[in-house]
Length: 546
Image 1 (cartoon, rainbow, N blue to C red):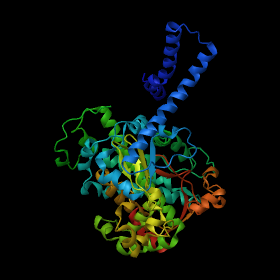
Image 2: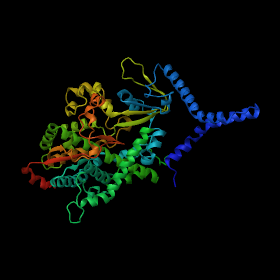
Image 3: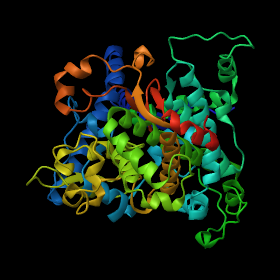
Image 4: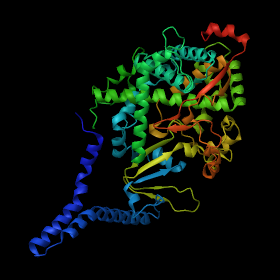
């Protein structure tokens, strides 16, 4: 039976904890054995108790002194300490958070070899992510999977269409019953089914579990009831997996915020390998490793990416469309003009649909699926300070460097005074050339540099396909606050708290955005939608959505 992570952690740090009391014992033994001194028991006990705090305080102060000396030698200063730090104890956490584009650019690109995920991050996420691509350093994992994500694979529109038809049909049926529906739950099941079909050639059919009902409605469970699908939903294996995976991600996120070597085959020429047409990702991976642990971890990592990131993009896009009907109207006009009311979108359609692209990009700017990330500095480095005229910030070797894309994406000095407003036009008008064109690293929804997201285009295609099919079917979207669970509604102080109002982030929110490894809407996104005009229903029936 494997040891619990807490036991392993204590065992690893036990030698450090034993040093101070062992030193006190040695002093006591020496004094009593060679100096004929009798040390009172109360003094001995007090020394044992204080030895740990005194030892670690002195250790931290010494490290602090060394780091300050190194910073001065580079003409730099240390980043601000955490408020309330005592005796330099903030140094124990060895973590810096930045939302400065130049620093993030250095971490991800210009100084890429100087940063890695690091052993501390890997220790925290190992119970969930194992040795997979999101936890591992080096390029082995990316080299294994990159050949699979070529154009023909990421444009598997037959896969998208069959699952979109199923999902939208269920969504329409629930709305016709007179209830609001949880768009986030539905689209997460859609992306889970498309991802499993795409990656492994096996559809897990999570949509078969059905859609949830609002919190304030308890359907009957008789086998003859139209609501009996709720029984199937609660017992369906996909529901158990989704709940467990959600909990595991939340625990992992808390671990990273609070604080194995791979058995690889030769990877030379990995990216030159031709992926066969009928080959799944699992088929592809076994060409590079026969380690079942690596295969398991890689499958879980890629599945999480294939499901959660695209589901987040679609969820927050629909949230923004519900809040900005003029954007929805303009987007739907483009869809009907370029594709029509029933035709299936194609790869070339998406290349020409500029407004669809910028709607996604503006959503990704305000609600990036991965709002926070972290790397560890392998050697001392300097970070840029965003305070004009200030010296650079010194980052000691071994420091965990967190960076926040969501903070950077919402900075008014980088995006203009309207940075907190949802406006897709900023990606096509003069603001594009004023802000983004001269500084492309202010927009990083899919990371950047050598570790840029492999599935970026797959996510765009899948989200675009589903959104087209959705807006061919529905012409209006609105939030249903009554269907939102009470504990998932924005607290009243979001509109009145001076600190929150000053940031401009939360007063306008109608939902509660949260994140673990990716962003999501706490409690689900409960919406109502109006079907397209009656005159269009005959055409939509031919497309399979009625």
